[in-house]
Amino acid sequence: MRSAALYGALGSLVLTALTTAPAPADGLGRAKPPGGGTEARGAALAAREAADRGIRFGACPASEQLPAPVQCGTVSVPLDYARPEGKHIGLTVSRVRSTGTRAERQGSLVYNPGGPGGSGMFFPLLSAVKQWQTTARSYDFVGYSPRGVGRSAPLSCADPTRFTKAPTQAQEHPTAAYKKQRIAEAKAYAQGCARRAGRDLPHFTSLNNARDLDVLRAALGDRKLNYMGASYGTYFGALYATLFPGHVRRMVFDSVVDPAGQKIWYESNLVQSAAFERRWGDWQRWVAKHDAVYHLGHKPQQVAAAYERARQRLARRAAGGRVGPGELHSAFLQVGYSDSHWARSADALAAYLRGDDRALRTLAAPDPASARASENSNAVYTAVECNDSPWPRSWSVWDRDNTRLARRAPFETWQNAWMNLPCAFWTAHQQRPLDVGAARHALPPTLLLAAERDAATPYEGAVELHRRLPGSSLVTERGAGTHGIAYGPNACVNRHVETYLLTGAVPWRDASCAPRQEPVATTGAKTTAGVAG
Image (spheres, one colour):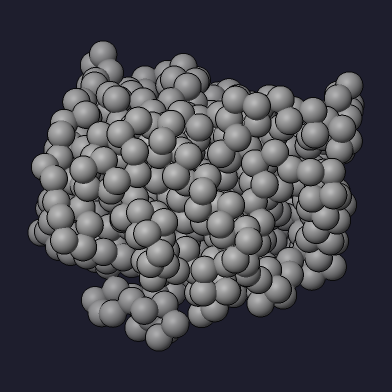
């Protein structure tokens, strides 16, 4: 599930303000069971010990860039829950206290922004943002870096400087020679993960992320968990609700991953690539509607042709020596995540085609200063997804499925495939996905949020999780496609989230909200009014 590129709207806001399964017939490998009772006992022991120790909070390290009153600490979790007395790793935690009275306080609100590979350490900063201030009166805002991320037993699979080399290619219909090159790169990356992580590698999983979340709950001194997860954070949040239903108080699932076991993760990525093509079309239609501003064409097909001209030009000569087709694609993939990227991307493309590449270089050139963080995020993404479930081992399966899909969805299909291809050569044991929703105890009401045209987590996933969690309620942002919708510009969505977190009440028969306003078309010198979508 390619969501490591962007962790929902909240991250942008901070920056700007159980049995072994036989191999299926298609060449999937054997699946290692999740461990069942052994891991459950280990998780219970770790939670009891964490409750006794608590978390010693103090000033945050300078590297976290989290000023007071945010404080940081560490919670110790077992690397392997089947051996809770064995090796432990430390997860970094951030917190800001609730701003309300003692009577208003409802405990901690723990947040995960997705990925796999995303850090939620920034979350306490949101307590000062206007949309969040009422909620911040009732909750301590708690963020953390999951296992492998940031300073939490950091995982690496490659030399960061080599991983972020530029410029790179991005063939929508790859040649045989290009496929051979990418296969070799995927094998090398999988080998790098195994070599660098060693025996620790199999323990970076979504199930362990869910168990870690319960240890964190206990360490914070909360009898029950209040949790908000976005994107991938909804998946291991759903695993948590399945493993620890009696520990749930309130849970918000924002932009929901389809939890069906057969979708985790190979099929999910195919579905995601198809959804990105639809969202790519939304951007093209919007740019065409504002041809008077961008001059990229008054029809979507003309906008698509303009992008293709830029891609071909960059294949011949990289902008600034650093922006080739691969960097162009990575930058413009963001228009599929959030319409807040639409205007800036259109303006950069238009300027580049006029002969000015400055805006495109600013938008798309890799930042050497973030190379280590980028490689770390990708390493965690790869390890978790490859460990979570069986993947096709035969290249012919990948080639067949992605070639077919690319005929109708060329924009993202092969780039998504290359990102996940190391899983075809994975050496660590791969688990069988847990049956989400198969809990022995009833859950309290939970709240699901989804945009109808979300590409990163297509809407059908929210419908599926809604079906699997009795008592859940689904809030839909109609006709919208931004990934991560809680506490954004849609007041209707925000009212439902705030009401739920403050009172526990959910809409009785689900709810729908009108879409947010379309973005305003802007360049350095010209603006047109936004139009409701």
